[in-house]
Length: 158
Image 1 (cartoon, one colour):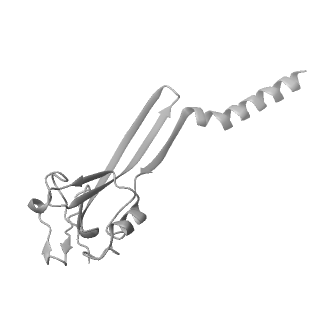
Image 2 (cartoon, helix red, strand yellow; image 1 turned 30 degrees about the vertical axis):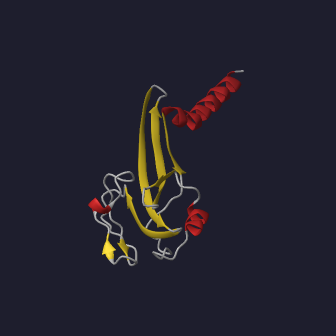
Image 3 (cartoon, one colour; image 1 turned 45 degrees about the vertical axis):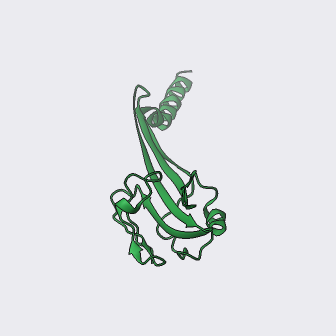
């Protein structure tokens, strides 16, 4: 009887030693992406004045916003988010979590169903610039349509 009791205690202690660390500390990280994940590499195929809006929408889907200006120009905006959640708890009593959202936005100026220029913002301080070979100019902050953007980050597309 006593031997069975000692074996039962040892088995209980071994089981507790295996399962207890999961109750002492646990943590994890999840990342969720929404919207088209557009970057300078994914827009490299665009030829200003030649790439059609149909190809743009076939590649990236429907834009989040579409603005038509009085001169017939369309501004298409694509937004994407990368949401990261990190969390942990200790003894299931103390918990912490950290949520981070990184948003990027891309604007495409379209005239006569062709992409004429593009720009983006939200790249964690990465400075970029967009040139428009059709107009042989570089998009400056003041060149952006007021209805579409407040503070664009320039992106170099070659």
